[in-house]
Length: 162
Image 1 (cartoon, rainbow, N blue to C red):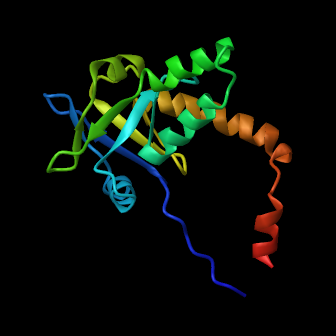
Image 2: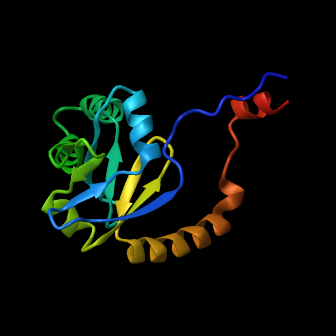
């Protein structure tokens, strides 16, 4: 049996506080993963699924851009996705202490005042106001429980388990 290698990804949940200048310390494990990819920061944009900020590596935003570019250039949905994701994206760079300055429009979108929750989502992470995330998490768990039978295990994973 071949040993499984754990891929680097964004996992777990970390709470930090904004300082008076609007900066927040990014969790060390998130920074470590991003720097292992060659980045000194991340790309963020307001989620259009919930009141959070979606955050990812440069590679991931390039994949999203490629997917958007593959849409018919004359269809409305191409412009909608480009505007909702790419036009709203901001590159946030770590300072010497591992902090980023959070743009005011991000804080407003996510209703963040002081506390910030970094939520690992595998290839991406989200940035939430902690109380809003707690409400979302309760609903997500209920929905996941109701839909668990629809979760299909991919064949490639079944083969690796043997």
